View 1 (cartoon, rainbow, N blue to C red):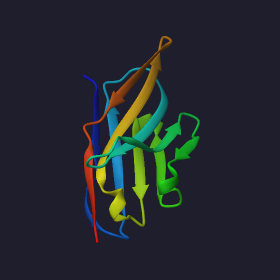
View 2: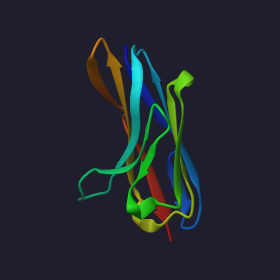
View 3: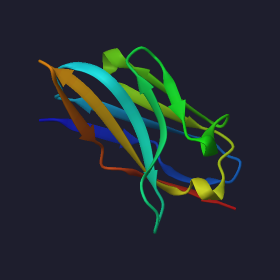
View 4: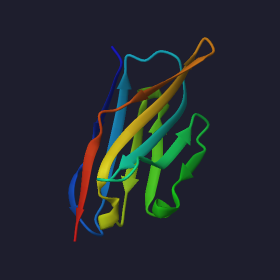
Length: 119
């Protein structure tokens, strides 16, 4: 059974830090990319940060310099270190992992973890 389990969300004051984790299990194939998205109330889901299998990273402009994405491919786990948090970072954060096997790419989603930044 495929599972992506996210953890690390919570309530933090503005200026604080959190670290999100997303661990996959039950997935076969090679990792293509791991991505964090977020969705705030009343807004569309947006890409926060991504990392490919070769370590190339990409960030939304709004989080550059504050968030860092990293991964442990052997553990099928992706992390998001979030520093200098702002109220506008409040959202449900979702993990997405894309795997390839026999020429077929499959995308998997986590259940989401709430991040709330208070003033």
